[in-house]
Structure formats: structure tokens, C-alpha cells
Length: 126
Image (cartoon, rainbow, N blue to C red; front, side):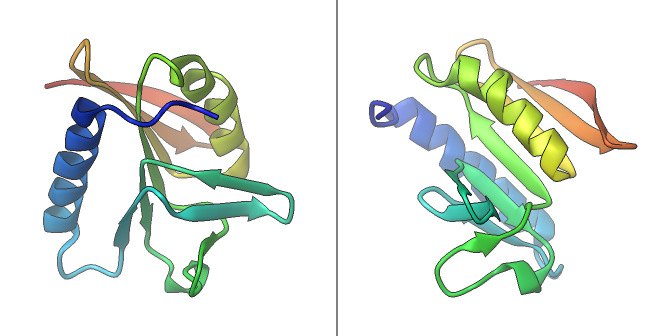
């Protein structure tokens, strides 16, 4: 089991989720923060830092069913390798439209946008 998130990690999650909520106001998309279960298949469940779902049919009473539209992971030392390698491939194969990797130490965001089934990388610095 991974260690609990740090205060800085949680602050970044909350600030980003607030920005997403403000940006998506009036749209059908919903923003969720961890802990929330996301089910990609019957045997594959994950918990993500921030999840954005625009299809209300994917939102059940107790979980998200199917790939979200946007996933945001805030890196921490204990999860960085998994977030960059394993989760990256998993989300790309599942058809997640955007995968954001936020590095609070180096203060940048990688935005991976799915194009023809393959992620294309965009960079942002904060």
C-alpha cells in the first residue's frame, strides 16, 4: 500500500479540481477527487487523484464505470514510476481522452491527448 498523500500533494489536487470545476461550470462534465473507484473492466479498478467524466451514464451510485474523459495524477515519490509507465499505458489503451501528469516538485504539467489511439504530449509550466 502506498503511503498517504502529503499536504502539498493534496493542496495541488484541491487547487486543480477547483480550476476544473470553474472551467466546466454549465457543461455536462463532472469533477471527482480521490478516493473514488473507477472501473475500466470487471477486474480492473483504480483510484485516481482527479477524474472528469462528461457522460453521465458512466456515473453510478458508487463508482465510475468505463474510462473517464480526463484523468489527473499528481506525482509523488512513491507513485511516479507507476503513474508514468503502467498507468500511462493502461489509460491510453482504455481510451481516456486526456491524461494529465502533474509534477509539484518541478512545477510542470504533462498533458497527454489521445489522437488516433495514441497519446500526444503537450507541456505546461506553472
